[in-house]
Image 1 (cartoon, one colour):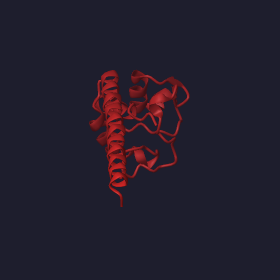
Image 2: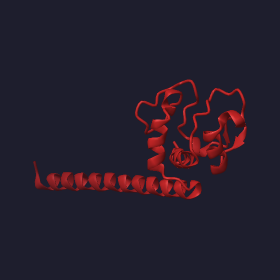
Image 3: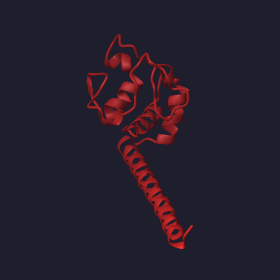
Amino acid sequence: MPSELRFVLILTGIATIAGAASVFGIYRQDSLQTRTQAEAMTGGDATAGKAAIGRYNCGACHRIPGIAGATGTTGPALNGIALRAEIAGVLVNDPKNLTRWLRQPQQVLPGNGMPDQGVTERDARDMAAYLYTLKR
């Protein structure tokens, strides 16, 4: 192989690696910014919220990105919930309403399919923080 071709191939490889690293860096920065915003607006902790979603077994009814085993189909999939205008078709999607919905869905909309599970205020804020990271 001629040395010029080898040089071009090496430069192409370096450029590809640099491009991939750049895309990864942008994705990571966007994820951190999304998490920071979600936590600031809810007063919750997204990591604790992810754990709480698992403890309350929300994945038995919902598909929830990032939650192991959350493959339920009874309730709506929660991907992109951060960008939805409404919660359950009756509440404006804001942190106060999402927290209220997570704690007392039967009080908000009597007879709906989501049971009251005794979610604490702290857990609801944490769960909301996690859910607001779900923009895709």
